[in-house]
Length: 188
Image (cartoon, rainbow, N blue to C red; front, side, top):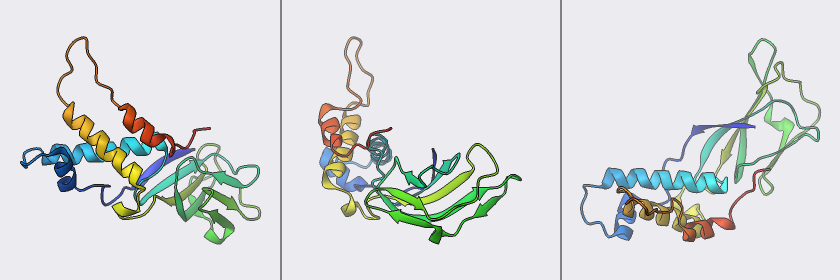
C-alpha cells in the first residue's frame, strides 16, 4: 500500500501563541520557527503512531483486491471513504460506487461488497480516497497526543543549536516515546 497525502490539516494541535506560552517566549522573533517546529512535531507524532491527529485526506493505492475483500488500513483513525477508483488497462481511472463498500471506522477496515472489476495494471491499480483523523479541531485530539506534540516541539526548540562534540541530544525524548506507546499502530 502506498499512501499520498491529498489535503493536510487546516490547524495544528496547538496555536503558536499557546506553544509560546508553554515555552515562556515573550517575543515574536521566533514565531516562524515555532510554527514550523509545531508542524514538524505533529508530523513526527503522526509518523510514529501511524495516526492522523487532525482531519486530513489521503489516497491509498493497492495493487489488487485483498483475497478476503477487506482493506485493513495501516493508518488511522479512519473517518470515511470518499472515493474509490480502479485503473483500467488504458491507464484511465474508473470510479467505483461507494455503496460497493462497507466502512468500519472502529476497526479501520474498508470491506468490498460483492465482486469488483480487476485492475488493468499490476501496480497501483486500485485507489481509495479516505478521510483520517480524530477530528477537525485540536480539542478532538486525545490530550496525551497533544501533549506529546507540544513536548516534542519544545524539546526541538530548546535544542536547536549545534550539539557539542562528544555529547548528543535525543531526537525523541523518552517522555515523548512513552506518551506515544499506547497509541502506536504496529506496521505489519
